[in-house]
Length: 76
Image (cartoon, rainbow, N blue to C red):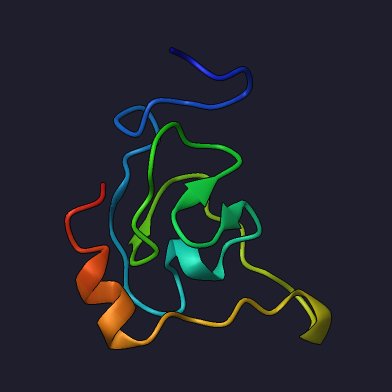
């Protein structure tokens, strides 16, 4: 079921990201695998066209360690 205000991953070109441009560093990302802008579970190591970096020390999102990235590897 579609969620209001969220877009399909294909429409926003969800793809592998490289630091610092990854979902984990975006203002829309909600750990462990949710996004305010994209439908479904989102791997924190991905990025999309809606990427908007967190700004300022109060907005920093702690990046997942490698073991969490390994566990979430199957999410898209």
